[in-house]
Length: 261
Image (cartoon, rainbow, N blue to C red; front, side, top):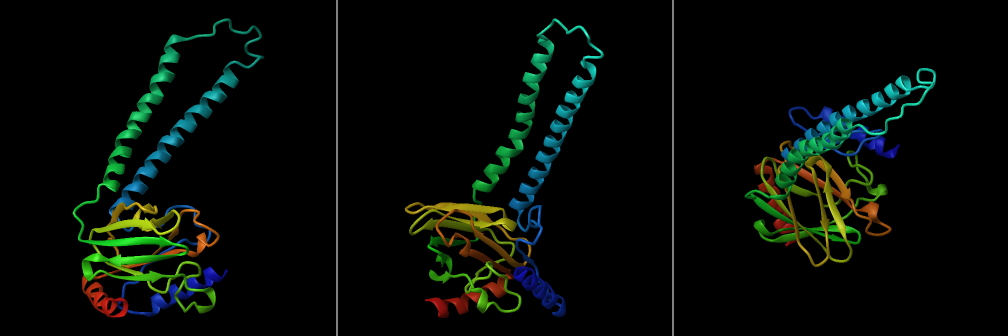
């Protein structure tokens, strides 16, 4: 309920500020589907997911239909004398080849999307993410190499517009419509940096650097959480990313250099 009240306060404030586009995406009460896509990767993920739903629905309808047809066609009242045949070569070939064709049809968009997600394009900037128990450290090597820690805001310290278990004291800032390379690692155990609206989920492994990327297409505030069971405070490692214009980002960088260096 507290989370719901905070969400309502945020949207009321958003409506009261004229001439300013405010957008925030975070988990919502009773949410079933994905968060709204805010990157090309997430748009393709949702499209692929919808394609899989269609395929699954067609297979389910076919199988259920065949079951009911067999029940009706071969019921005891209609077939008092059981059939004596046990094989049908044509049917066996069909139900062997049909799954192969379906899997091949699924494989092409799947492999294409996996490659698109993995192969980071020419990035406009890089952010290094270090998972720690239980907070994040962010480094901006392309902008003076400053770094800062990002902790969960305790419930008692929440301000209007901040979300319970999601808002942090030092959020990440990135410019809109820029390709952001994310390098992930960890200091202690395996963490996972996940930002659903951007279609990002990358493990942070001690002693190893993993790479992913995203490009935010909408200004706003986006939330995520550590998606690895990293200890008793696993649920206390939120991620807050502010997507702003390039001018606002440059202004934030100037302030951040003075604050964090």
